[in-house]
Image (cartoon, rainbow, N blue to C red; front, side):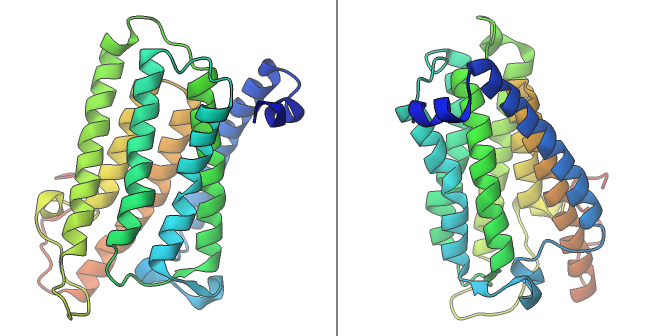
Length: 265
């Protein structure tokens, strides 16, 4: 794989320059996505529509679209000269990334209970994004990211790591609550209860946003920041849509429950 990278980039300086440009482009994508989502919901799940292509089975879609975020980084670690992977801060940040995507690609899809099909366009865009982001995050962390020896004891790394874990836990717990809303044989939607759903409608989204915000604080890079902001834009929009949908569908929906941030929004 080093041979392929050497064909694409004439030097490490050029590759790092390109990784930085990829991050800046993701900021631009986040801005464009923010504007688009003012007028349109992300078309999957309860907002799926046939105008975005033929339906793809939910389990298959989640597994295949998330898999590049796991496999491509694994290839980078195994088959390229990953000069920074012996450093503890880099190892821990890479472990955070992989722990999320092992759960998201290899566990979450197979726990889905009768999820609605995903339109092909949403599936394809998610696949491309996972390739793009997976390469950007892990190539930077494994080969270019440099941290001082004391970084793992720095408040930014410690607070960021705690935020990452709290967000990861909230995300996994919330997914578990959503999966178990309906008993076997039941259909239709129910109001989620328990965990952070007692405070916000988008508990699972809050968890993932918190997770990548913590990752950004711990990693201190433009690459992680771009990913966190893009994630926040997409998931915050989805949380708002869910909250409005719940209020319209359920007359007894808890009025004190906020959209995404407990007690505030």
